[in-house]
Image (cartoon, rainbow, N blue to C red; front, side):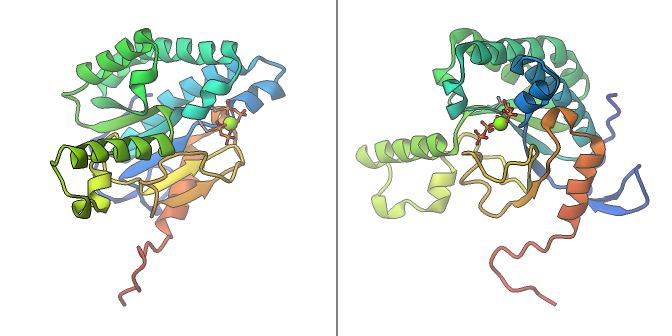
Length: 255
Ligand code: IPE
Ligand code: IPE
Ligand code: MG
């Protein structure tokens, strides 16, 4: 399963075919549709979350192999805490279990783990897992796995604004000096480049508070597949579409 190769070029011929596919440097993925996947099978929603967590292991494997450098996954949003208590509890248990089971593979394959989100608001037990996963993986450099946990784009921006307001109040910076780069430097992971491609499975066509600032110029890919059914071929279809996009960033194309 863990067949990583240290390939880093942007365009590559995949194992799947002879086609030339452009690989996004930073891929962001919604892990969405777990509940519907379970409901279709008459299972509790937590069963869908379990299979969804296992699918993340596959996604890391595919992305590492293909040369993605940053993989951000939307795991739990700030709004997801409003779900029934038993579902929130199941999500937290799965989170702890995921790291216990998966960390050796992450270590073997050189995957650094980082978190984006309001981590301070999480229970101490979860914060301990977060701290341990980040500290233990600091030296790994093949790919960064960024887990958006208790993440909300609006909360992230509000927190950045609060930090900047404090700096203005204590005289560290002047109001007129605040620009886009100031805001960007106060986001959760300022050193991580913006996502090149955002994939949302499950058929929903909305951003649901994910990477609101960072995805300003990301390419988007929506798919009907539910996250637990997401396959390598689904990923390649998204990459093939990404390969054909013309990213203009507001400019005109140069001939
Ligand atoms: C995504 O699946 C996982 C989380 C939001 C935690 P959902 O639980 O949203 O599944 P659906 O969208 O209800 O099917
Ligand atoms: C977004 O999905 C959060 C995650 C995938 C973790 P939701 O299922 O919470 O989003 P909505 O409620 O459909 O917008
Ligand atoms: Mg959902």
